[in-house]
Length: 610
Image 1 (cartoon, rainbow, N blue to C red):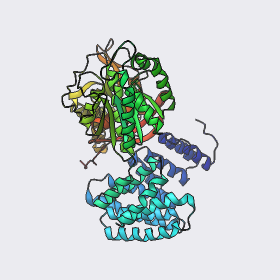
Image 2: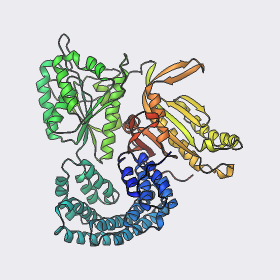
Image 3: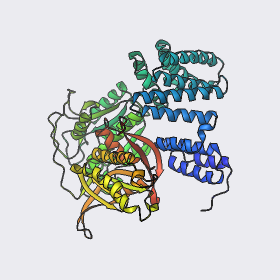
């Protein structure tokens, strides 16, 4: 491939234009380095993109391989300090963690000396160093550094430009908290929230940075809680009755009463953003109330637009179609659980609801706040494949907070204790979790290596897969390729990470295999068809979502697991205690299959070495 003729700065600008596509940014840096192999800025940008993509171990390895450890520039040292901090926090062995934390503190301290004297970058680096010292157990030294930095920041704040105010305030709150000057830090919280009015991501960044330190004292934890954004909301409720049919759960005559109750609830419970569908009745009433308060509305529809209108909007009357269209046009985002048709498969309603609830939990986790469900319900625990009570039941089992608004005359405390979920329907088209795996480096193996590769690498992976047989619906393999289908996203996640952990523990050299062998895994969850394969003579899985799953693995960094947004959302809803999914950006998937929001899958707790 002939590379474009660009300067190093041109390649750097091109890499940064990828924004939320860190893998593409990384690849662009590598192309630039083919022309300018000694440019440290391109090397650093490549490392930064790997870190954004969640591939922190590869980022650290590239940092060393690129020779960046010998570059004494502020930007390089700042990245080095952040990589060391992430390495330490992922280390289960306490002495080793403390050692790496102290190394990171030393790097941040050196960075502070290279920044502009008295500049905000220098103060930020000093506070970063103080935080790592406290986490390493050197509390007195860390608090002393934080206290000195806080004094310098107060002096700087009197002469700083107005545009520097938020950054100085951030840094000062961090310094005061580390120094345990909680009263002064708390006095600054209202100003910090006011400066960030509507900027929940910025508040979340402060909370994320301060949480490891704040958790060491009740006062610090209280201060952190005061900085958290308002909750993220999932809304759900009954469809309203329409011309020619009556819904006793939400009669037409009760619309204005219910709308007033929703308004009152939102007035007393501010929220940062909201997720849900747009069926006639409760959904649209929630959406209209949210939009009138300028709350970002994220609409999640279970299948294609026309079918949804025909099934969930039009039966309640033509007026609701106009209200639906108005809400949809003002929504911050619109997602489809599947862009295909309903085709008589009602379980897609439940799939869409679980996606909306999971996205609520994901955003709350990302913004360091709490998820909240608001539901319009008549209190009758009827059984069904999908619906309001099923959503309440799932949410309660996940352990999240909720508020119920009555669609009847009274507002009693509601319970879903009597709800019994029905058995899953027996249909060809069901929601399944899918894994595609591929071994990087397989094509470079010689014929001499193949028998040992099959025995050691594929044989070891087979033993892991066999250990997850209970909910495994299908397994297939070809060469170095793996295709697995699970009934449950949690089991699929555990199997994917177990395979990666097994391969990372293998002594490839002892087996005479090259060290460059590494596994990439992509995962997705969506509706699929289970049909007998005429060629193989056994059941197989088909559908557009199988193709979507297959396109994730090729853009996944080796040694990692990337998952789609639906997979991450359902995992967050049902398995949040075991797994975390870190957003890595919108990534162009393989074979021009479009851009997907992808997440890095990891375990909540660091894994101890085998």
